[in-house]
Structure formats: structure tokens, C-alpha cells
View 1 (cartoon, rainbow, N blue to C red):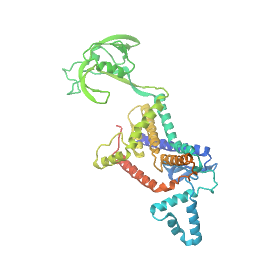
View 2: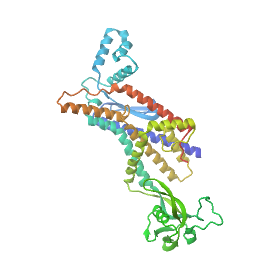
View 3: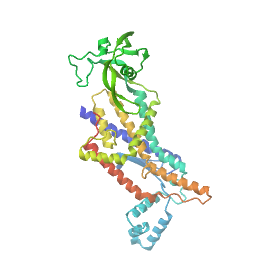
View 4: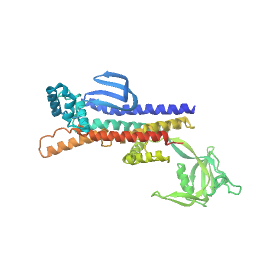
Length: 447
């Protein structure tokens, strides 16, 4: 059963990833069509096509490997009339010079050929110089909307998932209801109770499991953290606990024992001080949060993930070093899809209530969408952030020309950035390979 549950968890993560990709590409598709851009394909996954159907000029389909997706928009880049004219002239000169003219018109060399291939592929999506249904003809703000649509959909999906998690299921919270009692006062040398160890103050005073703490020394307490703060700050001082038991309230006098405990200051530093101890353990329950708590958590996670993405090359390098040396990985470091699937399988196979496992899965899927949102905003092609950067540069050039009353500049030819794009793609593949190997042979585990 445990293996079956693990497999189900992995499958659920694959399905969740496919849905996330579908929503991402829908975020591009919908504004593109609204702005009149001709969209040839909307595909989920890569590799052989498993299913497709053409509707209103767009082919919608699913491919074999759900590790990404894409839409193909007409005229992502402006046409290259000079290159096409040179190609036509070369074709007219000699039919046999096809491959040679291809190299010649790109100027020769591997990267130059790549640039020309990108231009040729882009030109195939155009239907003449007067084609109005192309991406590059859109105003700058519309191009930015189209390219940001995908990442924003991932962010919105994460907000919905976190809202379901926090407002639908609830946040696990230590309540003021007593679940268990310690038998004795702990010592620094042992966690077991010796015969000479003094009894824990709570048990000695008569507090029982199931009691709900209402107030301590006249201070109402709403959760266990508030109760714990009062207890820890009152070593050796008698406190009056008001507890609710069987529907009635009663007062119990408790004097916290004095033990050595760690205290964390506001600046994050930790010191060892004398603190109070009574020996109560809280019950943990799901407490539903306000509907805005989900979006707030999503925004907080954006900041945390951005911190990881900013250091991604260094963190991937350290992950590779840990893989080679066998050292334990940073649990807060980057993961591949393999790692996310593995964690989802662990959550599904965990020996815990079903609700806990559902909450864990929703948290993982929401975090994955936050990662997709942040990662795609990196201003490098072929990522969405790279296309946004190109559009902004185009807009800046046009604004500069308008300011100084110069003729409108030609559209930015992003095909010139193909060599940089190639390097970025190779780097992403290399980092992905390192993370996949690490997630297979040196994985991060939850338990």
C-alpha cells in the first residue's frame, strides 16, 4: 500500500504540473487572441503528439512528455527583408547553391547560421509585409501583457491553491487545549524521567489532558504560543491558570519549574537562559484562515523563491558538489521536477491523516507554481522575462525617437540574440541535469 500511495503521489504531481503548464500557456493564448495575433499551435508537453484538434485557426494538442508547453504566435520577430532578398537572389543565381547561400547570407559560422535559421522560421509564420495579425506589430504594452500572461496565471493558480489550503482546510495551529502532560521536569543530561526527578508542575497541580487554557494570571490566551510565552517568562513564579473542563471553568495554581532553554532575540540570535516549564503539550488542529491569507502566503513565497532563483547558479553548483561528495543537501535548495514528484510521493505515502496529505500536496503544487512564476520572469531569452525585456527596449527606443522628433526606429530584431539564447538554453539544460541527478541519487526528503 505504501508503494501504491507513493506512485499515486507522483502521478498527482505530474497531473498538477500538466495543469500548471496548461494554465501558463493559456495565459499567453488568451490575450494574444484578444489582441488579434494569429496563433498556430497551443501545445502541452514536448515530443510526439498524442492528441490534437484544430479550432478557429489554432491547433490544440497534448504531447508525450508533460515537461513544458508552448504556443506558436505569428511574427514573434520582425521580418528580415534584406535576408530574404539576398536568399531570393542566391536562389535565382544557382539552384545548387541552396546550402551555400544559406551559410553565406548568415555570414558563416555556427551562431550566424542559428540566427538565420531563426529568421527563416519566423518568416514562415508571416503572410506578407502587410500582415496585421502578428506579434511584433502589437503596441509595446500589449506585447508585455501577452508575455506576462503566462507567469501571472501561475501566480494566480498558486493563490487559489494557498486559499484552498488555508481557508478551506486550515492552518495547523497549536491550540490552548492540553493534549498531553510531561511526567517530570527535564534535565540537560537526559530526556527520560529518573526516579529522583521532580514531577512536572502541570501534572502535580492537577491539570489534565483535554483541559482548555482560558487565561494565565488574568491574561487571556488565544493560542499555545501566547500561553508558552507567559510560562517561559515566569520561572519560579506562581501562576493562576483558568482552564475549562467539562464545560466549566476552574482556577489552578501552577508554579513553573526553572530550566535552561534557548531564547531567540528579535535580531535572530539565540542565547541560553533560565525559562519556565510546566510540562504541557498542546493539541494541534486545523484552524481556517481569512480568505486573503492564501494570496498573502503566495506573495511571501514569491520573495523566498526569488532569493533562491537569484542565487540559482551557486546553489546548483553546491548541489552538484553535495552529489559528488555525498554530503547532505540544503533542504531549502532548488529541486527538479523529479524532486518535486518524489516529495509528492512521500507526502502521499506518509503515515498521517488523509487531510494532512492533501494539505501537503496542495502546498507543494502551489510552491511549484510560485517557482514557475519567478523563474519565467528572469529577463533572458527564451524565458518570458526575456521577451518582456525586448519589448521594453523597443518601447524605450521609440520613446527616445519621439522625444527628439526622429523617425520611428525599426522594430528590435531579437533574432540577433539567438546566440545568447542558445547559451542560456545550454546552461538551463546543464543545471536541470545536475538537479535531476541529485534528486535521484542524493534526494531531499521530508521524513
